Image (cartoon, rainbow, N blue to C red):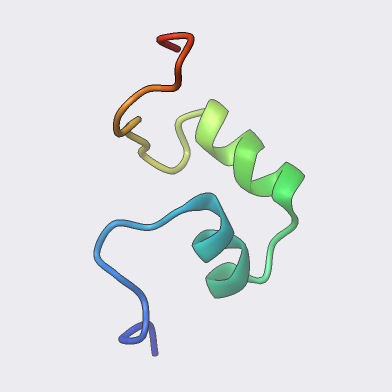
Length: 46
């Protein structure tokens, strides 16, 4: 079912896979319901 997705997912991937809104995905990430890791950093170092 999820074979077309990479092992490491983006929030957009999660939205498509789980049929959730952007707000819901980010709420789940922020509340540690879904584990998340930041890869790299922006030019502000965040």
